[in-house]
Image (cartoon, helix red, strand yellow):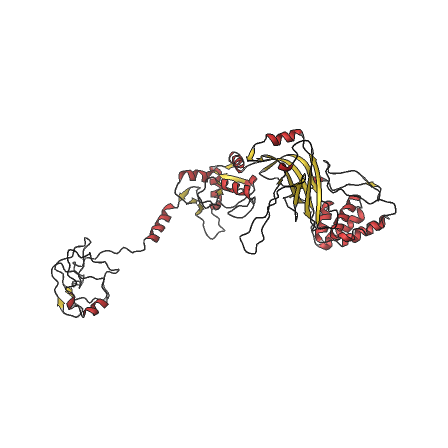
Amino acid sequence: EDLSFVSAMRNMVKSFRVSDLQTLLASMGRSKSGLKQDLVGRALRLVQTEYSPELLKNVRQLYETRFPKASGWLAARRPEGVPAVSYATLNTSPRGTTQGTDYLNGMPKLAAPPAAEVKLVPLPFYHNLETLLPPTELIAQNSEKLQDSQCVFELTQNQVDQIRNSSELRPGVKSVQVVLRICYTDSIGVQEDQYPPNIAVKVNQSYCHVPGYYPSNKPGVEPRRPCRPINITPWLHLSTATNRVTITWGNFGKRYSVAVYLVRVFTSAELFNQLKHCSVESAERCRERIQDKLRFDPESEIATTGLRVSLICPLVKMRLGVPCRALTCAHLQCFDAVFFLQMNEKKPTWTCPVCDKPAPFELLTIDGLLSEILKETEDVEEIEYLTDGSWRPIRDDKEKERERENNHTPDYPVVDICVPEANGHSPAHSSTSQSGKSAPGIQAAATGGAGATASSGAVVDLTLDDSSDEEGGGGAGDSEDTEDSQDSPAPKRGRYDYDKDLVTAY
């Protein structure tokens, strides 16, 4: 009979997908890397050589998830009079195991894999005080796509007092909470919070709030749901009475585990105080880092003499208050620590805004050198680090560039035409000096060839074009129009030092 069950298990293993094979091998402490044929061979050897109740349970669970309607075919091979093996919906035992008898093999059975196999990643804003329910897998009870699983736990009087006596983060929200966390069932590494599809959480017959989706402003991008610990404190019995939590979840092949913790929730201001007291990089160490980056590299074709760093935070486009970056970042550019923590308090991503690489809280550090520079400068937006570890502001260069952009009119010198030309000829037209007074005794040459002597104080407006001469019928009749008077405005200065259409009188 054992051989028939081994044969059935081998057939089930052969029908598994890659993800099923990886889950099976990982649950039994085997490597899950390689191609599908390698995974199948490894799983078949496992069935042949290490046949055990735990292996049977894991294979059967995976097969029932893969083929829900065909889950009864294995029971048909059970000997008459032998009861079926039952599996707990949720393991609520503190040790994570329940003892029973597997009459199919005459050996004690495990109701679920040990709870210690699944480890949830620690979160900066949540400090675990006590574990009320260790990570326990959600088990599907039937072939329906929507499943309901329940867990039960009780609070001690000490835990109730911690919640009641804690401060409030905001009105009605305590800093000591009972939170529900859900993640993938995977024993490899630490697991991040991950909600199953169609999740709903009911606490003592009342539905509690589950974080919704972040709207996406980009076309074609689906909204993303933040998977965070779910605060179930407002719906609990704050007494020693039993609390019952019902989790509705979509069964689409993924395996999930649920855990319940008593936690202390920190604010961004409290995390900032921790950062300020525990993780500040000294100015000397920052200078050494700059010198290392600017040290001459003989293999480099371009010699780097300086590195420019902006004093504007890339998150909020404002001047840095507390310069901060992750220790794993290769750049010197910083972002503001206060705004970064506030942003992750609302929407936790813990991603560097400069290089888009992970920037977890435990790797953040405050730049001591840039903090000193920010105190010494007030209106500087950019600095440059030099090879010796010193720095210089780039304020002057920017101001000059701004002035050049604002001043579009070129500044041309005023030519005093009273001074004879170098070739001995006098200029052919009159002009005014810088004070705006006309020079007396200047002869004006008419374009028609006839010389007309202007009276004392006569001025020729050089801003007139050829069309005005043509309309007046020649230059001889223009003397009346060009006579200067006390009420006449100062002559306009031309763009050029000469009139290209004016003929010099010899």
